[in-house]
Length: 338
Image (cartoon, rainbow, N blue to C red; front, side, top):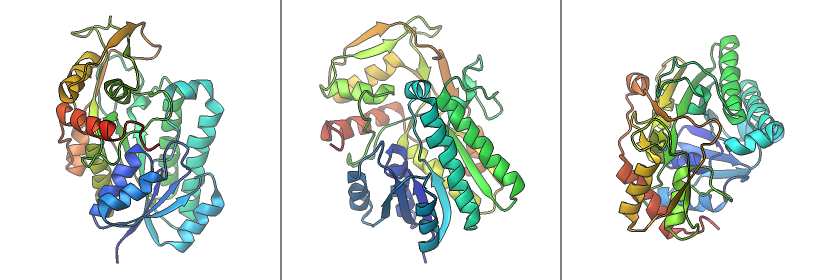
């Protein structure tokens, strides 16, 4: 009998890629997603790509009733927790909304897990918990000082998970702090589909390349970097999904709870990213410089050596492959899932 996994936010960008890898690894999957940042069309595409069927339930992690029904009706072994709001700028405008969705929702989920004696959780955290430490390379001991309210909610959920584990020793967790996911599934059938104005660089570049937007706005060209633009650690979403699979396998093998960075250990500037995408797509990508944004740092990348040590995981895909897969998705789906 296949092991059954609940994936909250499983119709989202990272969640959907992880679901496919779970199915390919012979797990059964139940997806809970409120579709606030995703499309129900993703479910059909997951089934098509994997040649398997997931159970999909539209609902919210704050809904105790639907969680109880899932845990009662399905023999869930472990939970992947992706559900949550993720816009840094929106979190500053609407902190109460982010507190309710990300922090309260996670507490409801964890309490329901405990009630139904489900004791393995893989949590999708973020490198935003590090804030601006004053240096570029972040390991798991880098001081935690998130600069955005979004980052603060991620850190608070991490704390709740650790507090839960300390008072319930059978409760085991894997916290993955990932850097900047980009790319798409090689089929071109699923990828990142931001609603409205993209918050991240690569969807913005892709939309300019496909003709949906006029130009890329680059916020700051006076950073202490070789070309003056900010540098980030971009990781292929498929590598990130593989890290999530490795994390669950580690918990299943009896490894104790852990927190690891998931990144490539390399950084690329905004101008390097635009140039790579232009080369792959064969499209001109105009850009314009603007002032720095508050909270942006010059350079940020992962020390992912602990993930290699604990999980045997390392990123496989380079920037060119990330751009190729992003362009395939965007060019085949110029309006995303709509």
